[in-house]
Length: 251
Ligand code: PEP
Image 1 (tube, rainbow, N blue to C red):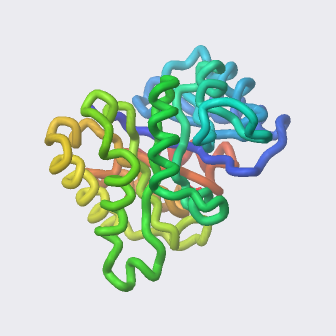
Image 2 (image 1 turned 120 degrees about the horizontal axis):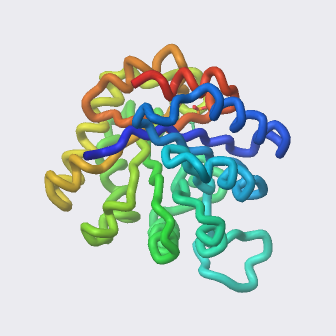
């Protein structure tokens, strides 16, 4: 059965002390037996520390926000999947729209990152989603299918079990504009259908598909009540312990 997951993507926010305080507060507020996997995605710098803080709780996990598309070597400033795995981190986020937009990540490069992550035992939170222009011109379904086809649909069934999909409409990220629960559900259902076509119904039913884009304590319950929405990838609202915890408790 697929899991409910809530991921906090801190992006380039919070210093070490602030991050530690946030994790301590969330741990004290959240019940660790409520069957929701909670994933913190801090800066690489604090990933080790945050991962250690979560080590005693099965339902608390961590994710890197990215990894290099190179395996190792002379790539100054890069962090490899093998390095992240050596910290016992469970996940990496890949293909966030900010990485696609500001760092020119392509579907082909993401495919390399997907392969390296799996090779180094990292599970993947794979982001996809359309711009406002694409939605308004009606190409969003094809666009999302293409993102999946070119970056993750080469995987075997066994490998695909390590993939969590995050649908993140770009127009909703950090804008305060949320996709309506019906808009989000429509895409989640579509993604599940596309996974069924590519693999089979069993795999599709077992894949967690998260929504991301201005999800907050007020709209989370409605979003998470939808049949195909299995949780959220949360940016801004994950930086405050009370807000993040309220989202976690929204199932
Ligand atoms: C994100 O960064 O993936 C995100 C969804 O951000 P926000 O919740 O701030 O829109």
